[in-house]
Image: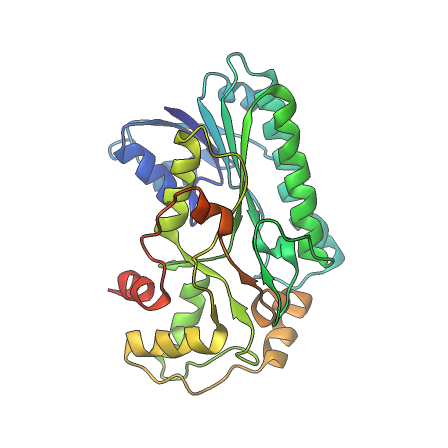
Length: 306
């Protein structure tokens, strides 16, 4: 295949490009900085990678690079849990997803020949948060800021169907690998000061990065996959269990809770991502026949930290 990837230098995208290269596919990396992308994907290691500079939230000549691709994977979007949610930041989070997706969809519509599939990222923030409810792909959207972002994001992606392109939307949970969310949790544990964040009762709907990449590749290559799939492991855990298991795997204590008020002071509304969770099950993903390499949290953490 020939696959265009936005967000290619990110936590998931970089591993996806590596996987596609290993399997012999051609990859068009759409990036805001060619110099940065060349460091991540040196030509000596990634001979199948073509680097194209783009401005994701603006249409431009870059859109022509999508013509002739068999598929497009759209992973672009500003980080949501690293800064306070000022009104400007909220608008930036929204625009980085909706405008980029709008431009990708327009590029697909105008391409000749057109890609046959768009795999578009979304997030389990779609469902809102709850300590008691269980969500799957049939559940209704929530009513908070992240739910609004995901609904708008998915609405822009859904317009690609007007051009006859198959659409797969993957609602990502908390993706675990070296780096990402797990990287932020490791430091206190290394200092023997690890523990649950907030009450510890909130759900932690996690997924191993390898399973996410496998699901993206499956979505590209299996024409029967269409619509929304939760990219979460089939066995979510509560935060207290997750940090207990992390302590066991690292051979460190897990006794010092991080008070929610400390995160709120740092991140404001952005702390919701960590302090409030949701129990999300990948019902359609399992029904599609997808087999998880890491369905349980302990083997997943052992693999990542080994």
